[in-house]
Image (cartoon, rainbow, N blue to C red; front, side, top):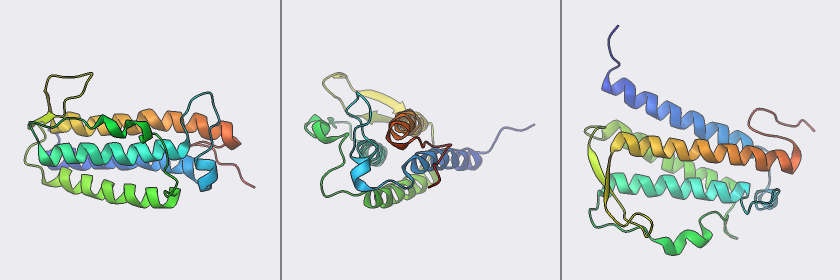
Length: 171
């Protein structure tokens, strides 16, 4: 048996990211913008807030991968609204935006020279020293973020109307 080719690994990464995004999208199926903003648990998290965060998070890491800025600092001023769906945002609009970001990520995965290339990550108040990580690790971080928040979304959706990524209520 031979090891998978680099091209196959890239397509596998794209497929896994797409699959996890689809599970999150299923959890959102049939909800309106008001429901997306509704808190259903003791947490501040909402379905719309999680969607906003995932779009923002993937866009952020895409930018880190492209720019590779050795002087970048995380802009923490945006964190207050990171997990909120803005008043002008809609589920439909955020999903379309996420589709665009996903397409950009897939194109980057296919075009990056080497998945083992080490890139700088932005510093932050909680990680003041520059951290370097591989392109592959960064892509897996995006996957982990989507997976992690898909679980949150399932719980929020179940509390909203009993549906989740594997069960959709039929009216």
